[in-house]
Length: 568
Image 1 (cartoon, rainbow, N blue to C red):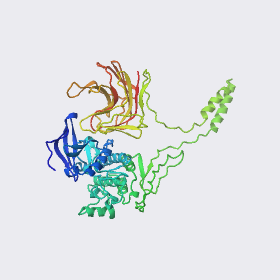
Image 2: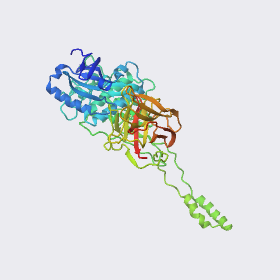
Image 3: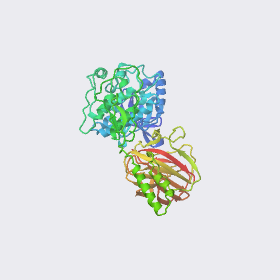
Image 4: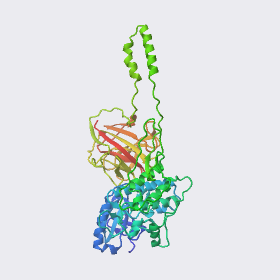
């Protein structure tokens, strides 16, 4: 294929060659209409002339373009541009995981990368899309080590005709599952195996199988036992079990879903969850299409019941760690009744009515039932309101439509997850059906999943759609800030309305839920954090606009579990 650097394909100006593969060349290109760079994957002309190939490829590309997840590279466009068939995608400046692996990677970062890719795979698998080529070259690294899975363009669509009639020829030998190497039908578990190979390589610096030729490598995947995983000092032994299960020869012996693998990785990263590990790890017999094993969760022990170790048949069965409970001693009531009777006699002697106090004393002696611990959200300071205009607890993703750009907002586990993954940009999302308003009260429960603590996340109001808005945010270090974004016709400019201010009302750190409330009524702006009023100021240019949730810079991932708009 002739060099394209310096040429324009459609509206995309080719800048440089950033990668080559067996099917296409990937370029960095400029898109002047949106003032951004994109990655454009250009197919060889010989494929452009095959109408049958184009029809199948277009159908698959359309399906992949509808995968909207923070850990899957977004597809912007697809088509024939000046004689070249190409796929246009988001440009990620951080390079590939393969490039990052030129330096040693800490096991904690390896866990985080594998967990993020497992989340993206779980999303794709639940929509019937299987990647079939998971490898470090197809994992891009955005700022702050945010992993994004790319090259779904050769993916297999479950129960549909694909670009090849079998699994052979699709994939890379070092990362290919045994069933894919044999040409057997594949399902989502082939991606789990490939991700297990990536995790193995991240942990010990080499792939488990590497022969003198691709055929020799595939033979090893099919027939040879998994080489021992040599872990660095300080790496929990649990990773050996996770990798061994992901790389089982039989799909029936692996994690049955990417969600199960993600759960195992999260358990390895957090001591509050543990695994029950059997004495040995024998491979189970090969079974045709078994039902996925159910995850066993052991309930918390009853009162006065000692906590016993849990042993399960599956060495990777997830078990909840029971909370340490102090046995409650049974109260002996009869001594109290003796004292009560003696007191009654004494009271009678001095002329007091013991009958009047007996019910109250007996009520205090009754044993209360065991307390039930429930999560209680902080109650904000009361604000006069005229009713709820909009509310979403994200329990049902279909109830409300939220603006989504570059696949940076998605629903998962009853929460709205927002990831600012496009280099150098903030990101905001809002309910699509909302009316523009000047006077309103916005409230949201937000928590940061990952990202630098010096960048903010929060709620915005009075977004005019031209680049002007107000952004009320908190930061992981325990401060809040109110900023104005103004577009004067050139580059948007940020200015402080209230500079970053430390406050005990802000819960610091990742995973801490902060409830933010911003009341914008005429020129008056009032700010609350977790029920405490933290500031009050004036907006010199009150206007009507949109409202929603915002992250302030690249690399921040947050959860929103509640979003409410109230009419003043």
